[in-house]
Each structure stands twice: as structure tokens, then as C-alpha cells.
Length: 86
Image (cartoon, rainbow, N blue to C red; front, side, top):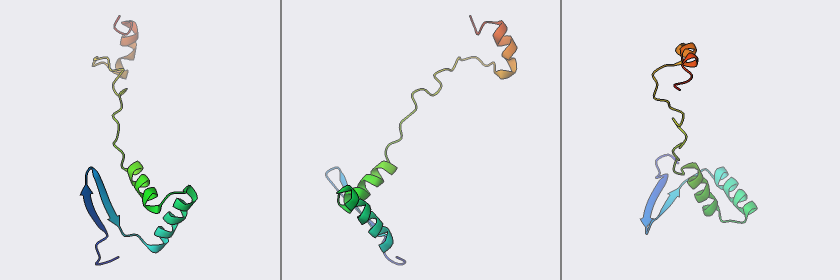
């Protein structure tokens, strides 16, 4: 694939056509896997790319237990004595 364009992109109405070049062995494995699933190789490749590059979701629970206190583990005894801020 040296010296050749390995990828081209065309956009139309919210869908992008992405053309890639892969080794013959890779193409054969994709074709075999697609046949096993009963889909076209292009559909399988599109599903694999979509899954790999799906939007990352934000973790809603991140910092859910944040207390706002500046005290940490080093002050554990003091925190316990205070009743965890009660």
C-alpha cells in the first residue's frame, strides 16, 4: 500500500462514505466474518468502526461523593471524632 491513497472520505446527507485499503488477508477475514453473520462486509466494517469510535459517555457518578471538605485520609481520626460533619 506504499505510495497509494489508503483512505478516501465522501459526505452526503449525514452519512459519510469511507473507503479504506486493507491487506487481502484482512479483507478475506472481514468477508468470512460478515458471511457468518449474514451481512455484507461493508456493513460489518461500518459496525466495527462505529462501535470502536462511539461517543464516549460522561460518568454521571464521578465526584458524586464529593464532600467539599479539604480533610483527607491523614485526618481520618479527626473526621471520625467529628461524626463525618454532623
